[in-house]
Structure formats: structure tokens, C-alpha cells
Length: 313
Image 1 (cartoon, rainbow, N blue to C red):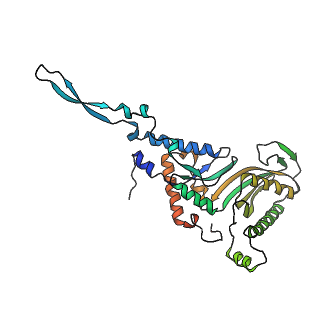
Image 2: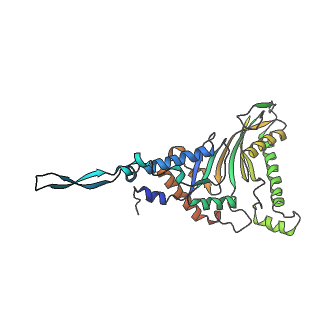
Image 3: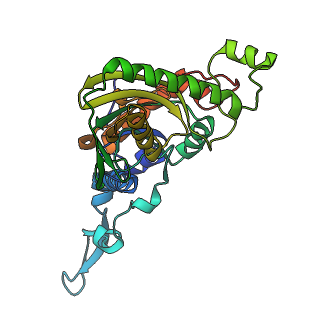
């Protein structure tokens, strides 16, 4: 069945429900991303013909046509009470409910999920299930900063010539193993018990709460001294936590390091390839993207309702 263009703004607005996957640029706050998307949606809704042009009404007009034969005719007149200059824009940003599934820091780019209108329930369920998020984190050896991020003051410089990719790969592998042990501790399971063995046979498990960050996977994917890039799979993480992790890696390597870039490439089954770029933050792009995310949710119902302790990503 061929798709048809819908020009009825009220029909589009009633069906504006679901999950939206957008690509957040680095250096842009979430509230500014949200405001830009809602502004463009309302602007496109108000630009539809049905909302811009007031309807013409016919009014009777009596004209004298002689002493005994007056003329009665109907003329078209615009109803100025319904004109946009009188009522203001019909759709405003406050009319659309919108909330993020999980937050991203101002320095982090990549996948950012929003729940729109009735999609707020879906966003809350996804947030409650805490799917794994994957990041590409880039660090720079030889320089430390106050916040471990690139926009703060430099506090220390150190030599990094002795750092080799093999040493860095071995270090991140040991970090992954320590976090997997921590995974069982947060679940309240004794590492020496039969229950811990049975759970370990099922694979990775989710923590019992969302207070402690856990790294499920970390590996070195690029090393161009002094820059290196790690791929990190984690739950309950934050921008400051990942930046601090890069700083601690630098110390373990007997030098210093700070984080220069963070990019979220995947949130559960929502990938960066399906994220809506900034030039497409408009009504047609939003509707198309929400339809794509609906297909992902239908193909992976466990994103909304988890019935197992082990992770399924």
C-alpha cells in the first residue's frame, strides 16, 4: 500500500506518540535538543494549510434595488476571530509531552532517546529495564585536567612514551574482569555459592538497582599515540564516570590522561545508524523515525518488559 501525504494537522498530532531516536551533537545540552525538536514540530504543524487559512463564511447582504424591489445576495467573508493573528499558533511546545529515556552529558554525542506524548510510558519502561549502552570513548595521554574533560584547566603533564597498546589492552581486560565480579556483589549473590554458578552459566546479569555503574565490556579499538579509543559497554554510567575511568587508566599506565570525546553508539537495540540527524529534526523526519523505532520495539518486546535476570542485548 503506497504511503499518502497527510495534510490534516490534528490527525498528525493525534498520532504523534512513541519513541524518538535522535543524534545529539557534542557541546549541546539535552534541554536545547528537546527545545529545537519541539519548536520544529510545532512550526511544521502550524504551517499546514488547514491551520493557517481561516475558513470563508457566506453572509447575507441586503442592497437597495428600488423602493419595492430590494436585492438580497450572499458575499464571502473571512472569520477573523479564527485567524492566526487573533488566536496565535494553534500548536505550541507546551502541548507536546516529551522526556528523555536516559541522560547524556554536554560533551557526549550520539544516541539520545525521547518519549513523546503516549510514548512516555514506553520511555519509563525502557529506563526501568536499564538496557546496556555502548560508547566510543577517546582519551589523550600525557595531560590531566581538573574535570578529566577537555574544556577544563590542565593540572599536570607527564611522559607517555613508555605506553604501548599491548599494555593498555591488558589493563582494560583486567578492569572488565573486576567489574564482572562487582556485578555479582551488587546482585546480592555470594561468589562461592551454587546460585552464583547457575547465574553465571546464563550470562551477564543486570544489577538490582541503578545506583552503581557496571562495565560489561571494554576493549581497545584504536591507538594512535597519544590518542586512544575504547569501546565501553556499561549500565548506570555517566559522562563524569567515563571521564574519570580514562583518568584512572592513565594513572595505572604510570602517566596521566584525560577524556577528549565521548560518543554513545548504541542504547539497547537503538543504534546510531538509526538516529535522526540535526538537519532532519522536523515533523516528517520525526514521524518517520518514530515509525522505525516502533518496529524495533515490536521486534524486541523485552525492551519494555524484562522477565529474566540475565541481560538480552
